[in-house]
Length: 241
Image (cartoon, rainbow, N blue to C red; front, side, top):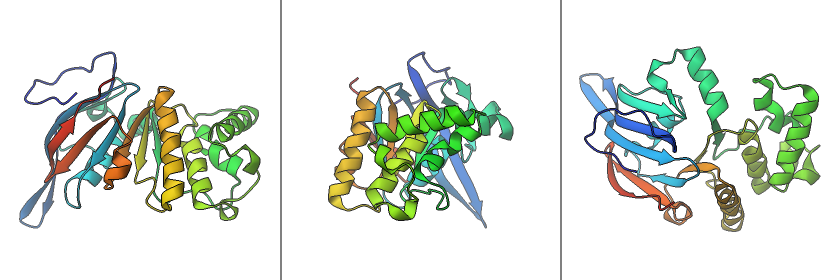
């Protein structure tokens, strides 16, 4: 749902994300850069969105806001029922850990750890026991087709295999939202299709997916989209779900 010119509202029960009149302005010398300038929208649980925009559109700033890596200058951001603006740094970090899973263009796997150990990493921070971590990591590896590579290091994997491990790691704490930043940027076209098919499967299983990309053919996998330009929403299509 795209929301414009409305009072700040608590999110509805079926909304996992709501932004109300969000601005992110930076002061650079004598100039104020309006990276985001009054953006409002909401995303329902279980939906699949793409966010697009050229360089300078505000796409990266939007990613940082949604990922709780940056805070709005003004406006309200609700993530799975929590008002991000009201959280201190510790509470925000905890909320991010429990509610967001990240998949990056460059994988960001720890080279010294095996596939299984990389998937376990987020579970360390929520205090799961070693046996629980191992069991869940093995199940997630199977979910993304990597159960036969559990003891391998990232250097022994192809790019597509590394991205599958990254997806499994992102799912480790059963996040409310899977946030993917250019997830096929370092992959060939055939492998890109395989990874996007995996995101499609996760969406069909009820996971909320937000895909940030500059590639129209990748964005086309999503069921709804937002296109940013100069810090505002240029176009938007609604989620038909």
